[in-house]
Image (cartoon, rainbow, N blue to C red; front, side, top):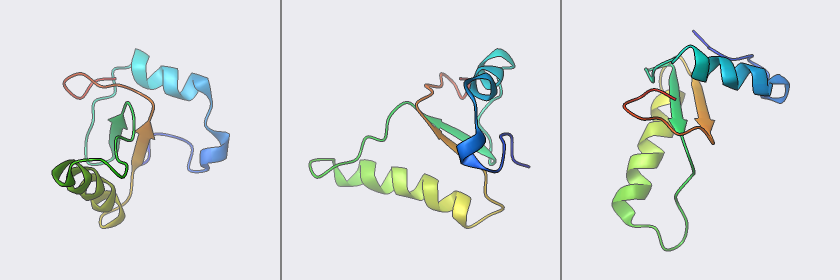
Length: 76
């Protein structure tokens, strides 16, 4: 189940606000990341953790990986 419009170019601020307002919790279908914290100086363990999260979506039914929304206890 995809929570957002399947065409990422059509996602609106209202779509993202609805996730916040409805407190849509992270699950196997959706994950929130405030920032993509990987770069040339990033610790190897942090890189692996981030890439494992991204690849888990690719290896299942897919989902929404939303960068720019902070989550506390899985709630945006």
